[in-house]
Length: 342
Image 1 (cartoon, helix red, strand yellow):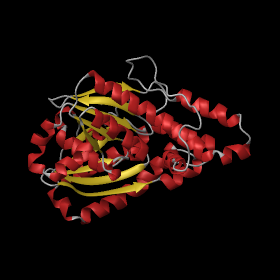
Image 2 (tube, rainbow, N blue to C red):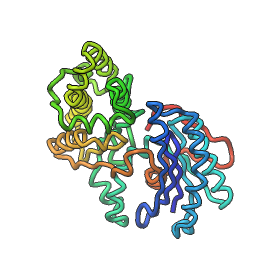
Image 3 (cartoon, one colour):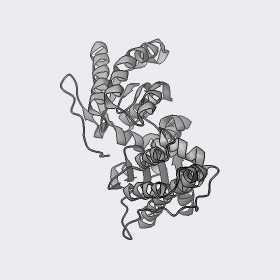
């Protein structure tokens, strides 16, 4: 059983993963309410809150019966905010040293990549490896505030990054779009809520598709287009057109993501398509990627809503399923991986 820690950004999280049954327990402390006052994550505040809340989270974990079966500790090693990662690493290494357990560092993006498979494991832990082989090769899309990545998992379980964003991530584009429209943070859920009553074809925003065959994403032009559009409209008109602006802006993001996914599906056959990361909770995006998977004859797999954002359950799961490729450390200085690599 694996005790996992996550602190890459603004969530403090602890979980226990049991290979014999799945996620045994998990706890998350979110800082959204604090950062919403500033329109985005403030690193100093995030670090302070991790220092404040890992202690109480650990006290909850110690009270859980699963604590007695822990034989390994796992912790996010990057990418993320360096100071935040350091707090989680210090907590994990302290517990590991006190209990005399080994520690494994897990790449945050690898954990997102594997997170859609957590429900599959929970359904039948004993047959998971066999069922996993039936779903490979796998095409995955990670969509969050900091990353937008298409990747594949081969029949042998090797992860390969196929593309990423050249500038802004999709979640960042949604957050900044919401800020331009004056509707708060986090922007993705706010844009989705207001888009429900709007027309996705009311405004023509760029998709950032690029050259044919190019799988990379680009959202900076979309954000700039929204800024110019809003600046050219009187304030009362912006308010009156808010639903249409949100629906059209969201449609541009979803179209760009789904079209690149479809292009990747045309390159080779995949047995499954996964969606993970915080933006995976967007219903329009989820429906669009599911439709692309269905058209390609692949099974669609989305991470559970509680495992789309930053969470420790996916860290524990990735430590178990992918331990051979994880960076192990014990006692020495933790080397934070600064790159967005799978």
